[in-house]
Image (cartoon, rainbow, N blue to C red; front, top):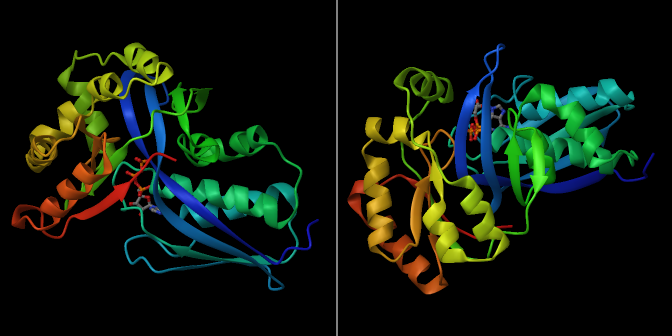
Length: 291
Ligand code: ATP
């Protein structure tokens, strides 16, 4: 048991450089093939031991549950029950990752809770053991525990390490609208989309550190569902591409768009143009890098 009273952890958001849907399991989960990448848009969690048993969550976000429905509380409960952790824990969550954005905000907060409690209590557990414990809470959590550039298969839990994607500069922008992940997958199932992203080519480009080819092969089948429904996604992609992006694509089920730039100056110029355009007023936007 460690003598620590408090630990702080950054919880990084993710984007999908590539996303393909391969089918559906009998239990309703979709089988996917995704190239995942953590980005430098991050929440911060401070985890403190308390004498009082239980879990207390404080968050600055009004958009997520602050009680036991929060994935952070669910993760903490799983750890307390699995390892009989003494006393209680107070968790302060500062949210920066847009909510319901396709950036795995809840999953990465849960992952940071698993990792933070391992450190706080000095538990000798491997990442694999934590990933196994975390999977019932969400298929993206095992990846968020690992982070970096990964191929995720199965329902997202079968991870293969890839070399770090070539360095570049990103604009990440979340339009001011809500997209239901459940609705997107349902539409995907009923519309019979046949488009197949070239994920093997994308993996090769990453291995060869070929940024322009990697960017050209970034692709997401769910964009075929979400973008026609919300034309602003296409407008954002066009706007960012016209300002020098190698590519602009949607992440997850949307509605967030990321754009990849080779140099920082053109990224910064595109981001300030975006922020001063009335069509995109109120959208959450970030300058970011891979991490
Ligand atoms: P994914 O990319 O995995 O589909 P997402 O980025 O689309 O995830 P989240 O930000 O994880 O979506 O939020 C999805 C839902 O989860 C929200 O409606 C929110 O109420 C709930 N939720 C529970 N805990 C959290 C948390 N710590 N942070 C964000 N959302 C949370």
